[in-house]
Image 1 (tube, rainbow, N blue to C red):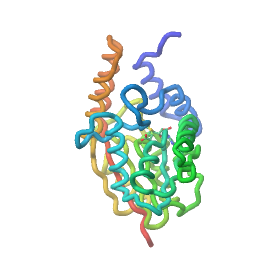
Image 2 (cartoon, rainbow, N blue to C red; image 1 turned 120 degrees about the vertical axis):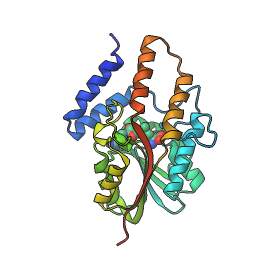
Image 3 (cartoon, rainbow, N blue to C red; image 1 turned 90 degrees about the horizontal axis):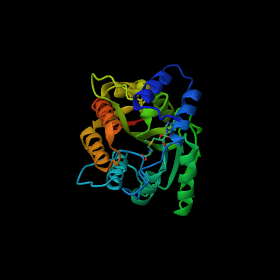
Image 4 (cartoon, helix red, strand yellow; image 1 turned 135 degrees about the vertical axis):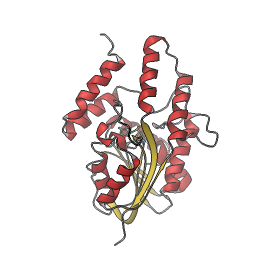
Length: 278
Ligand SMILES: C[S@@+](CC[C@H](N)C(=O)[O-])C[C@H]1O[C@@H](n2cnc3c(N)ncnc32)[C@H](O)[C@@H]1O
């Protein structure tokens, strides 16, 4: 069978994006994800992060950068022992093992929409003897199967840009957080004034920082803080990836060009917001 070109793929995803029910969108998303390798595993990595990482303070590898990103998320989210944490879009749950090990978080519930990653993450939790502290569930970010006020913290690392929609997730996060609880995200959005047509992101979620803050505020969140870490994420990750790419030729050049074009329009943020007490 002939391989679909990068441009063909782009056109197909763009056309698919427009008129979907949530179920259809998520089914297609999962089918696409299942055909890929999960996480940064392989010769260049020993952890299973599925994010771009935070390339600050001399990070040299995707392992160090992945760890630095989830450390930053935990610091911004003020994670500590005795808390009930919900991790949304957990992937292979590498960050959950880290938060339990380094921030003493007692209990984490982690969800993802892809059954493959939930299965692998569950096997890993068992292998590390952490099944009691880390509960993994198949669920969608926009329809959380939890009662209201159930968590102290909700975290989502490099996942909310894929949800249909991020705003629906914000609403659900607000509902399941206890009053005084905190949401923290690492997320991809649009640079101010830029239109994003990247097939790897959901275009409905591509707005800038000020709109991100406005949406959180409209839902009821307060003490909203959003920082761009784009310079420490997107560029260094792209450079690292290009250094380790083995494929060459015209096709590889075209993919590289398209990738650079799309990423020049993206911002990468760490955001936090609180559900008010009263
Ligand atoms: C880029 S990966 C990041 C995984 C992990 N947080 C990490 O940093 O390694 C994004 C994850 O979000 C999940 N995801 C996408 N849409 C979702 C949804 N609607 N509900 C739950 N998870 C979703 C994907 O299946 C994927 O595992």
